Amino acid sequence: MSLARHLLRFAAAIVAAAALCGAAARADALPVTVSLPGPGSTVSLPLELALSLGYDREEGIAVKPRYILGGSMALRDLQSGVANFTMHGMPAAMLNRLQEEHYVTLMPIDDQPQYVLMVRRGLKGRIKSPRDLAGYTIGIHANSLTNRTTSHQLTEQVLQGAGVGRDKVRYVAEGTEWASVSSAFRSGAVDAGMTDEPFATRLAAAGLAYPIFSTSDRADQRRLAGAGFLRVALHGLRDQIEADPAAAERMVRVMRKTLRWIATHTPEQIVDQLALGGETREAMLTTLRRNPRQYSRDGRFSTAQLRETEIFFHAGNPDNAAARRLTIDSMVFDRWAGRKP
Image (cartoon, rainbow, N blue to C red):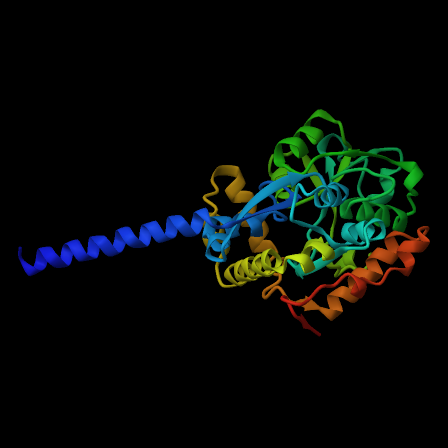
C-alpha cells in the first residue's frame, strides 16, 4: 500500500474519532431549559443566536428555550422545576423576588431598553400621545395584579406620567410572538400596546399600528424615571445555583460569548446567522441598525444601570411598600459575570 493511501486512511480515522468524540460530548451535554418571552423578538434573539452558534454545546450544556408570556410565569417555571433559568425583564424579576427570596439575577443581557407604545391604525388622528389613551384597551405581555410584567410596569408609569390613572384603561395580554401581537392589533382586541421589537417595526411596516412612545426616543426618556433601566437579564434560584453551580457558570459563559459575538458583528451577519428571511429579516435588520446599543457588550453588571433600574422599579410601584424597600443589589449574583461602574 502506498504512503499516500496510508496517510488518507490515517486522516479518515482521525476524522471518525473526532466525530465519535463530538457525538459523545453532545450526548453527555447537561440539559438546561430557559424560560423567556418569544420567539423571534429582540428579547429571545441572544439565546436563539447562542444555539445557532453552538455555544451551549461548546460549554457542555444543551439549552432548550421555553417560550412564555412574562415574569410571573418565569417564577412558576423555576419553582416547579420546569426551567433551570429565565431571561426576562429585571423590573418583573424584582417583583418575583418579593415572592421568592431565592430569586437572583446572574447577568445582564440588555444595555438599553427597547419598548414602543403602538396604537392601532384605526385610531390615527384620535390618539396622538399617551394622555389620549384614557378609556382604551392596552395590550401587555401578561396581566397579573400580584406580579406585573416589565411592559405592564412601564405602561403604567408612562400613562400615569401623562395623567391617565391605572383605573382609566383596561389591560389585556397581547402575547410575545408576532402572530399573537399582530392578531391583537389587526382584530381590534387592543387599541394600543407596549410592544417588543422587531414587532413594533413590523406593525408599522404592515400599516397595522403607529408609535406614540419609545424608550429609545430622547424626549420620551426625559419623561420616564429610570429610563436607562436594565430590561432583559438572566435569572435563577440561588439555592439551586449554590447546590449545583456548574450549569449556571456554563450558562453565563454561553451568554457572555454570545453578547461579545453580537458586539463584533454587523446586523446583516446577525440575521444571516439566524437564517431570517422576508419581512422578519427586514424588520430585525431595521431594529438592529436603529438600536446598536440594545445589548450589553460584555455581560457584566453596570452599577449605573442597576441604580437606574431601582429608580424605575420604585417609581413604577409607588403603592407597594415591600417593593419600595427592595434593593436591587440584594438580587445581584455576580460571581461569574462581574461588575463595572
